[in-house]
Image 1 (cartoon, rainbow, N blue to C red):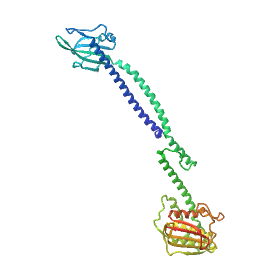
Image 2: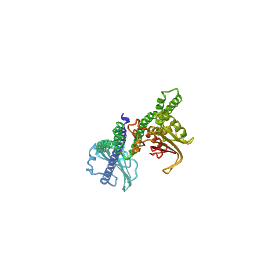
Image 3: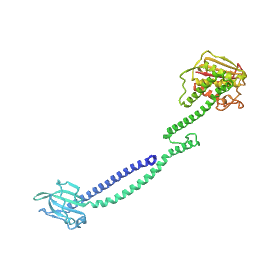
Amino acid sequence: MRDKSLSFRLLLAEGLVLSVFFVLVALVLERGFWESAESALQDRLQIQAYSLLSEAEFNDAAELTLPKRLHDPRLENPGSGVYAFIRQGLHKILWQSPSALGLAAMQPPELMPGESVFLLDDSNRYVLHYATTHNFPSGERVFMFTVAEDARFISNQVQPLKSALRFLLLVIALVLVSIQIALLRWSLSPLRLIVADLEAVEQGQKTHLDGLYPAELQSLVGNLNAFINIERAHLERYRNNLADLAHSLKTPLAILRGCAESFSENKQTVQEQISRINEIVDYQLQRAAAKGEYKAIKTTDLTAVINKIAASLDKVYRDKGITFEINIPGSCLVYCEQGDLYEIVGNLLDNACKWCQENVAVTIALNQRKARRDFSVLLIIEDDGPGIPVGKFNEILKRGVRADENIHGHGIGMTVVYDLIGLLNGRLEGGTSEKLGGMKWAVYLP
């Protein structure tokens, strides 16, 4: 699981980067210490060569004499690690320090007078060769001063520094890793907060992600909240569509119930209602699966829908002896799904029949203008019932609310109508009928 952990990956990556960085720093600093020590040694050997040059005395016969006490006592002690040679030319050794007893002389390269060279020979010694000239009665002669020192002296100087450097870098690396772990925990804490909030949403303790998140995560949080809202809306849609399905089946079932006593006389009606039930089921399943914006791409004859629903309701409410006054054209095509029209007209007419005394009026007007908009169709459904009580109009458009709790129903019919008209980009208005004195519903369709 660690390879899937973001914290582990970040720590591993930064640990590798820090390791490479400190290794490079250690190598660079150690190399710098070594070069600094070599430079200091070169300067020291150069000074010793100059000191030997100042102490050396030549007579006219080019014979060399040096004082018994040299400037550097180490030159007088065999095996001290510091050695000196004086040559005439490149090969003739005129003098060598007592410390070089038994030591093979270092062969100098060919140099011009005044030139010097500093190098590490095959015997692991640092050697400085310096060439100079001296005038004699017989002519000018070239002398080579060679001063050497064992490399172990530099190693002894650099090694403690290297050990101290590595220890300090290790301590610094551990401190930085500890700081980095703390910073990672602090930096990733918003992600842990999002995870905790998502668990709270999953358990129903929250409805959405509402924490204080960094700006970089706001887009993610917004997308997650949108996803949560969409899923919640889908769930609510499924619940509502199940309720709508049950409500839509009420009228066909009531008609079938009324036809059950005399099936042979109403066989065609029974067949029509069974087909209607199948259409309702298909229609509601399509609505439940719909996810995009509503678009009507075909026309439906509103007149035919009204006539079929009125004929069916006349049988359902036969005992009331309802008189239908239908003032509609012979054909009225609107851009709407047939199932939607059945839901809208069926619910409104069913409510009118349920609440009326004995009269229901249906009227269609074409090319109407309302609220600065042009509508192609205005459907008006009126009854002579008691109407909706004052203050109840907005309430009955809410799912599950009924105008009269004593009347049987589920309280979702008008909600379905309101939602469908909104999806059709239409307009629904309710009020008191001037013609019949009861309820009046006006449906504006584009």
